[in-house]
Length: 548
Image (cartoon, rainbow, N blue to C red; front, side, top):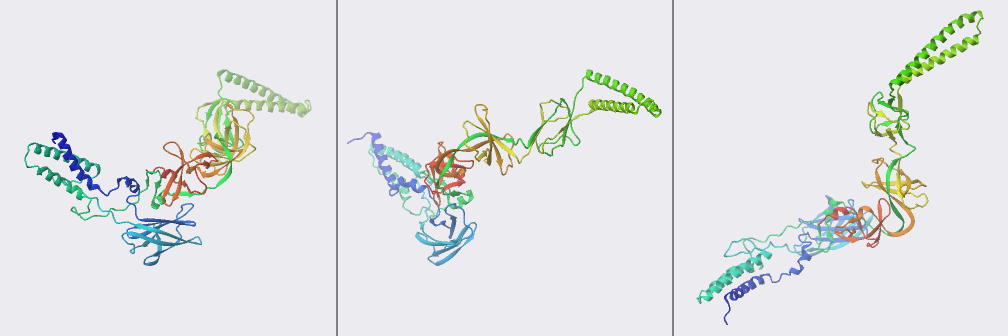
């Protein structure tokens, strides 16, 4: 039967590729994903008993033991660790945050059962596990091509090169066959030269160098099923901490917008009673943050006078001077006549009192011309706002200074529904600071269809600013059951779902999709998606979420 030339070329190429494909017999490519996730990790074992959790690694001929508290994942640094080894019992010593023990008795392959006796916090626990040991992986074999170069080709690139060369060899063989010549052996030899190097690459033969063991390294990684493999050394660096929440009943809360305001009984405004030009006292205007006391002079206000006012004041001054001169002469006459009894003493006394009153009126007029109004601090506290500039004209309704007592601050929140009887609440700032609040009162009139509610800030108030926005969480009368966890444990996944990380095994973490509601400024209630008493990551969860 005669085949077309192109068909004969394809048949020869298929025969050649078939020989190259057989070089991969015995390799299960369908399971590579399962073994690739933890490829290159060190031999290890995990064990947990009572309050302790243990991970042992074989590293550079040494058994490295990481011992943590089971519930919190907190490292134990004051424990005694004894190990039952094939060479007898040995004690591990603490070094570099881990307990270390020389392990010359570990075989190169197979498995090894170990028993650990841990004593800490007046408690002794026995933990056991099997250390799985595997042969050191050989260096990947290199394929050599007789007709090209000795460069290494692996995987899909190797298959493409084989197919290309096989197709070229098939075309050459077809041309020779069409001519009817005997050199048909040439394509066969070409196939033999091309394929055996590839076929022998998987037979474990020596291709120019002794096999070398690949170095074992532990890297945190996200596995194909979404779980995280995080070695214990990495957990120590990330400071991973966990809790085991239990189901309990809590009061439902409302999230209210709020802002920091000063306590009205410990704050005040400094304003001028008349319009005038500002001038600084001795030492200058007080700076922001300056501590002042009630009664301290902060500025002076000099009222401006128009030309007509100055003329009137001069006229009144002249009239007063004239009246004073007349009364002084009258008093002089009365004094002379009073000695002879011609003028009663009462008349002299009345003239003296009239002179005194005229002089006081003149002195008051002089003070009005040049005396400035003193702006004094109404309360003690810190200067929170300052709007004073030398030469500035201050209006009567303008705030020149605002004084706030930094240790007495309130929170004003707005609610659209009535809150229950006076209840303690909490607040959270944008920086994550938690504040404890005490109910002070609620308004009886709406403000933009909302009810203003005042709370006093208790405890530490460092870093708070007047006008700073906060989120107030006020309890309501409703009850809800769930798992209370810190807000730091709740994350937002890439798809927008709310998740927490469950610490399933010593070095495994699984994301759990949950439904939560706010509880207070520092906690939320997990209503669904998480079983009770599971270990939930509450510190370092954001760092775990970055592992890829």
